Picture 1 (cartoon, rainbow, N blue to C red):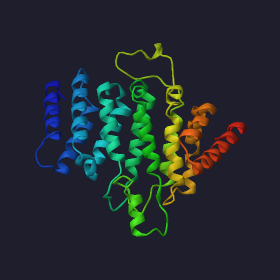
Picture 2: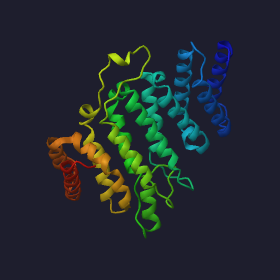
Picture 3: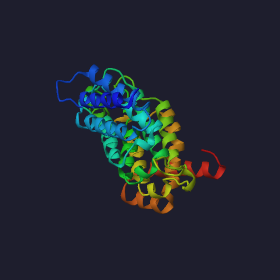
Picture 4: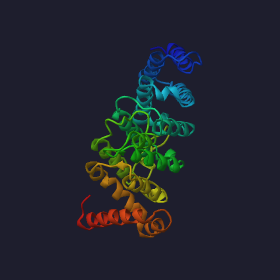
Length: 306
C-alpha cells in the first residue's frame, strides 16, 4: 500500500474508532480489528504514524467503558493490545503503558452484572499481554510495578468461585467481586491458573528490552526479581484471601497449578519480608495458610523441583 493511502486509512480508522456518535459494537470492533491488521503490516517509514494511531485508539478504548463491556469490542481491543505488545513491542510508548493498565484494570474490575457464559479467553489474552510487556518492555513495566501487582492480584481473585450450596444472596455477594465476563455457572479452570503461574515465573526471567534505536547487544539481560520483591507480598495476600474466604472456593487443581508462580513470589519475598508480612498483613487464618505455603515452597526448593 502506498504511504499516502496508508496515512489516510489510519486517520479514518482512528477517527471512526474514537467517534462520540451512538455506540455500534460491531462497527467499532471492525475498526479496531482493521487497525491491528494494517498497523502490524505497515509500510516502511510509517512507524511513527502507526504508533500515534495505536496510542489514540488505546485512549478511546480506555475512555469508553462500553468498549470493554461489550464482548465483540472487548475481544478486538484485547487482540489489538496483544498484537502490538507481542509483535511490535517497540511501538509501545511510555505514555501508552498507563492506558494499557487502565484497560486491563477495567476488564478485571468487579461487576454487578455478568455474562451468561464465562469467557476464559479474556483471562488468557490479559496474561499474554502482561507477559509480553514483562519480557519485551521491562523498562516500561519497571516504572509501573504497583499496577502490575494490582493486575496480578485481580487475576488471582478471578480464579475463585462461590462455594456449592450457597444461597442466592451469598452467591451474588461473591459474584459481585468478580469481573463481568465470569458467570456463576462456570468458573475459570486450571488452564487459566497454569498460564497465570507461567506469567509469575516470567518475572524471574532475565530479558532484553525491545525498543527502537536500542542495540540489544549493548544491553545486559535483567529480570524484575529485585524491584518486584517489594510487591510480592501484596500479590500473595490476594491468594491467601481468596483461599480463606468462607464464601469462596479455589479448586484443588487450580491451587496446584498456581504453585510454581506462588513459589516464584516466595523466592522474591525472602525471609525478612515474609516475617513482616506475617505480622502486618495477615490474620490468624492467613498466617496458617502462609506457613503452609512457605513449607511447600521450602520443600520444593530443597529437592530442586517446582
